[in-house]
Length: 609
Image 1: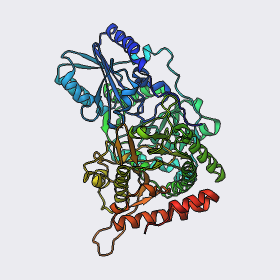
Image 2: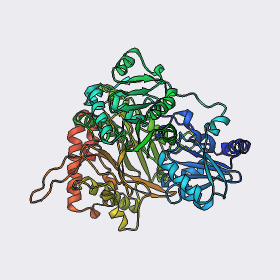
Image 3: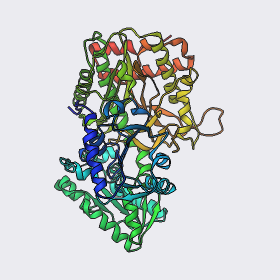
Image 4: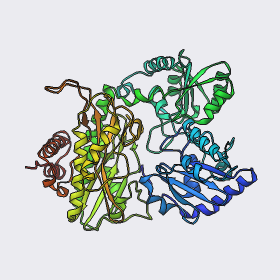
């Protein structure tokens, strides 16, 4: 099994551990400390050693921050976790704040006492974050204090060791480009930015650039490490050699010098002392790196991670791989949905569905000689009120059966060597209410609107986002998450910089893969989310048009539940899109199915007249 069902968070840990932290702060002349949910790489998934926020508070979400002061403590979360956080933290210890409406920098301006000394770990905050936090602290006469040792590490007695999963080479057949050619492109980009070097802090960029994969964090095939790329081609990779076999070490040695992770600080300091101009991405690079460069006489060049856009715009091999991955994955999901349709209400629980889906993906992968490497994130298997918790994670403590008259929300994904998948379907258990059917249809209208969009060059994710919400807005409804995130190629299922959201400022470029996942959530009752992955297509002309337009190709292949549809709310164009999509689903994954599952799919994908 790739997914654990242990309890996701324990509120009881907060009181004793916060007391230990406060004692440490008092002993070291500090009035408070910031604990982000982050590691040195600012990744969504972190190794067990870096789960400091969860260890201290009990909160297990993928985004959050705690601020602990002498007499108060706060946990900041976004809209995805407003219900979850209240179940996982001790509300007698922590007050809950909004990470969006009142983020730490804004909170500090209004709440941090004058002359307070607020500590932070400069490896766990980006350059941009620290700039905002420092400005807020100075405005109220407080001081932000960088620490050489994280106090949570000091009090965490059984903190796990750093991960040492084996790294492996990602084949050119799936990568589509040799690492040496990628490095030439990136070296030119670094020089064009006016830099002599660039530090890759994102392990996804390290993995993509050098065509390597690993297993240091859950659900994303990353080998944690850094790289310092040079405009003159003399690159260095900072990776524990214990992760490398002979073949992998020989391969990397041809591309860069391999150095221990502990050498990075001295290496950057020495470059800076020689007058290097070092590019750091202010949204990704740790504040500690900025300090190392500037304190040693170097110059920081503020520039985006040079691998980020090339990684986001998939080449032809990566696109072909993800199409193949989605055909296999669609077949696996169809087998699961067929099985689930046969289960009587009250006879199956959330964990059973997760286990069955993972087995379906495993078997389908074996049948097609493309093994399931991992799930791409912990499956969201939410029945009834659990579906209203946007990022619900089932555990043995929370597991519940799928009951009559409820909705069941299943958000899952897989990692295959040729592609990464992410799909959400919501299905009725027994007979849905008319309200459920209406709101399901409104959500589907949003998904179709995005899927069918045509847009000119320069369009941003923020420009597309209202299309997904328009039908909901007309009924006074909305959802508190973005509509779409970027997706990697056998890499992170949540990949930047592209996204479809109110804050999505990145231009959508051909080759980018995104999710398309509008939703609706009624707290305490049910949740609805529908999700396909989509590929930004290359621009082409429209008859009678003046300019070439981009569009989206839908990658995900699985039917929507027609029992949930209010067809009177769908336009003829929307019905035509849905019929064409279902015909394609049947044509592409039907040959991979047989017997009862094929008969189920033929019924599920039947045209709506």
